[in-house]
Every structure is written in structure tokens, then in C-alpha cells.
Image (cartoon, rainbow, N blue to C red; front, side, top):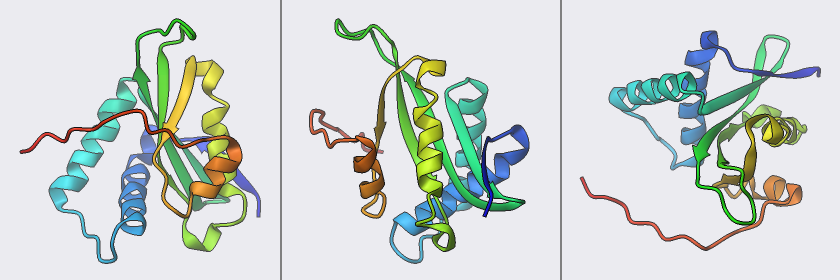
Length: 155
């Protein structure tokens, strides 16, 4: 297998959206079915964030066959006394279809994100992990942190 990891282009919009939906289906309960409105809002989000330069996506292919994807959102943060860089990266939607897992594709996709640190001035990478992905991330040096609180806003 000759896997190529490449940046997503405008022509890949539907692939980025459909693979996010596929990722959510794999990560959530069986039978996950997003509404048409959810899919359209996902599409609008991808376009807006990409156009603003905050969303970067890489696609892994074996020839013309899709074998994986990862996206990264760049967040602007104030400088810290210990690190004046002002960008943090939130890695999202790392997905390798089951038939292609355990072949190093996830490692290559994650590597593309991590190797972009200097290009984008990133001081820190963050992510939420599924149970299946945790070993990959911890073996790369990611460590659990419990220093923030969350308050969902009701509708």
C-alpha cells in the first residue's frame, strides 16, 4: 500500500463533510443519523473556517481510495509569560475507516498535524480522544489534563 497524505482542497469539501459524519457515526451510538440541517451546518462551518484560515485538513489516500482524514482548528490565544506564541491547535475528526486501521495511517495523519507547528506558530495541540485512539495519542506524548471547567449554554 502506497499511502499519500495531502492537504485537502476546495474540491474535497464533500469528502471532508461526509467523512466527519462517518467519524461521528463510528464514535457515537450505533444508528447515528444526522439531520439534513446538521449536515448543512457542518458544510457551512467547514467552508467558513477554511476560508478564514483556521481549519486545515489532510486526507490520506492509497491511489484514489480514501484511507483517512484529520482536521485541525487553529485558535488564537493571548501570549503567556512562558510562551509568547498565540496559536493553539485543536485536532478534530481523525478518522481511518476500520478496513485501514492498524496500518500506520493514523500516525501519518497525526504527524502531518504535529509537523505544522512551526508553519502556524502553534504552542500547543489539544484533542479529545475516542477510546480506540487514546494509545496513538499517548504514545506521541499527549497527556490528559483536567484544568478547565465547562458550562454548556441551554437553548
